[in-house]
Image (cartoon, rainbow, N blue to C red):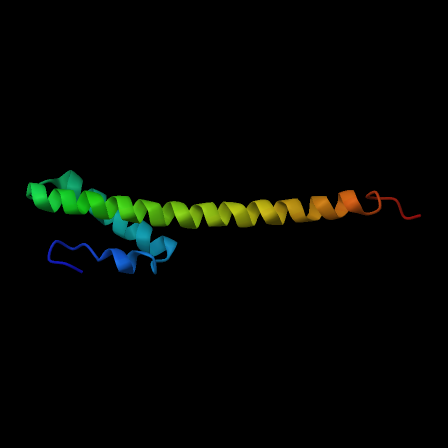
Length: 87
Protein backbone atom coordinates (compact mmCIF):
# COMPACT_ATOMS: atom_id res chain seq x y z
CA UNK A 1 0.00 0.00 0.00
CA UNK A 2 0.99 3.58 -0.53
CA UNK A 3 0.92 6.32 2.11
CA UNK A 4 -2.67 7.27 1.25
CA UNK A 5 -3.90 3.72 1.91
CA UNK A 6 -4.29 2.62 -1.68
CA UNK A 7 -2.64 -0.47 -3.13
CA UNK A 8 -0.84 -0.80 -6.43
CA UNK A 9 -2.72 -1.74 -9.59
CA UNK A 10 -0.86 -5.05 -9.96
CA UNK A 11 -2.23 -6.28 -6.64
CA UNK A 12 -5.80 -5.56 -7.73
CA UNK A 13 -6.03 -8.60 -9.99
CA UNK A 14 -5.28 -10.95 -7.10
CA UNK A 15 -8.06 -9.63 -4.86
CA UNK A 16 -11.07 -11.76 -4.10
CA UNK A 17 -14.55 -10.28 -4.31
CA UNK A 18 -14.94 -9.74 -0.57
CA UNK A 19 -11.52 -8.10 -0.25
CA UNK A 20 -12.21 -5.74 -3.15
CA UNK A 21 -15.69 -4.92 -1.85
CA UNK A 22 -14.44 -4.19 1.67
CA UNK A 23 -11.63 -1.98 0.39
CA UNK A 24 -14.07 -0.20 -1.92
CA UNK A 25 -16.33 0.51 1.05
CA UNK A 26 -13.36 2.00 2.90
CA UNK A 27 -12.39 4.12 -0.11
CA UNK A 28 -15.94 5.49 -0.38
CA UNK A 29 -16.02 6.18 3.37
CA UNK A 30 -12.77 8.14 3.15
CA UNK A 31 -13.97 10.14 0.15
CA UNK A 32 -17.27 10.95 1.83
CA UNK A 33 -15.53 11.98 5.05
CA UNK A 34 -13.46 14.57 3.19
CA UNK A 35 -10.39 16.13 4.69
CA UNK A 36 -8.08 14.81 1.99
CA UNK A 37 -6.10 16.82 -0.51
CA UNK A 38 -7.13 16.92 -4.13
CA UNK A 39 -4.28 14.58 -5.03
CA UNK A 40 -5.29 12.08 -2.33
CA UNK A 41 -8.94 12.29 -3.39
CA UNK A 42 -8.01 11.59 -7.02
CA UNK A 43 -5.87 8.62 -5.98
CA UNK A 44 -8.72 7.27 -3.86
CA UNK A 45 -11.18 7.76 -6.73
CA UNK A 46 -8.89 5.90 -9.14
CA UNK A 47 -8.45 3.08 -6.63
CA UNK A 48 -12.21 2.92 -6.21
CA UNK A 49 -12.65 2.57 -9.96
CA UNK A 50 -10.13 -0.30 -10.03
CA UNK A 51 -11.87 -2.03 -7.12
CA UNK A 52 -15.27 -1.60 -8.75
CA UNK A 53 -13.92 -3.31 -11.90
CA UNK A 54 -12.65 -6.22 -9.79
CA UNK A 55 -16.04 -6.58 -8.11
CA UNK A 56 -17.83 -6.37 -11.46
CA UNK A 57 -15.50 -9.05 -12.89
CA UNK A 58 -16.25 -11.42 -9.99
CA UNK A 59 -20.00 -10.77 -10.20
CA UNK A 60 -20.06 -11.33 -13.97
CA UNK A 61 -18.19 -14.60 -13.46
CA UNK A 62 -20.66 -15.68 -10.79
CA UNK A 63 -23.57 -14.75 -13.09
CA UNK A 64 -22.09 -16.83 -15.91
CA UNK A 65 -21.63 -19.82 -13.60
CA UNK A 66 -25.21 -19.54 -12.36
CA UNK A 67 -26.55 -19.20 -15.89
CA UNK A 68 -24.58 -22.28 -16.95
CA UNK A 69 -25.78 -24.26 -13.94
CA UNK A 70 -29.40 -23.29 -14.56
CA UNK A 71 -29.15 -24.00 -18.29
CA UNK A 72 -27.50 -27.41 -17.77
CA UNK A 73 -30.50 -29.36 -16.41
CA UNK A 74 -32.90 -27.75 -18.90
CA UNK A 75 -30.69 -28.68 -21.85
CA UNK A 76 -30.41 -32.24 -20.58
CA UNK A 77 -34.20 -32.49 -20.34
CA UNK A 78 -34.76 -31.02 -23.81
CA UNK A 79 -32.34 -33.44 -25.39
CA UNK A 80 -33.58 -36.55 -23.63
CA UNK A 81 -36.83 -38.27 -22.79
CA UNK A 82 -39.76 -36.11 -21.68
CA UNK A 83 -39.92 -35.59 -17.94
CA UNK A 84 -42.25 -37.98 -16.16
CA UNK A 85 -42.48 -40.44 -19.09
CA UNK A 86 -41.23 -43.81 -17.82
CA UNK A 87 -41.90 -45.73 -20.88
